[in-house]
Length: 131
Image (cartoon, rainbow, N blue to C red; front, side, top):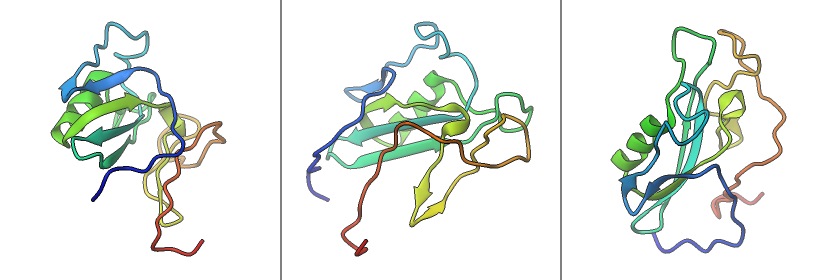
């Protein structure tokens, strides 16, 4: 993999990983300690892009999600050198090859899986597909 040729970028809600260290502190963000679905994007030392979506349901006892500090640790374990927190919660949706790859919730209740309308998306186009 070569360096990323990025022509657009997206902002997030603060650093999770900076210079390879988890810098997410649950106490510095009003919702950081909340256990919820999370979405993050990062780069490893070789400029490979990392996408992480953690399913969660804030009102559910099973699979409630993670805190910001926990997703920061996950990203470090995956080799992230830099990573930011994106909008999370029930709008956390990952689509791969035109199929939803996770289980987003729109009402934060168990067993109701659906996609919410969102204002921001991150798209990566593969040269493997013609569309």
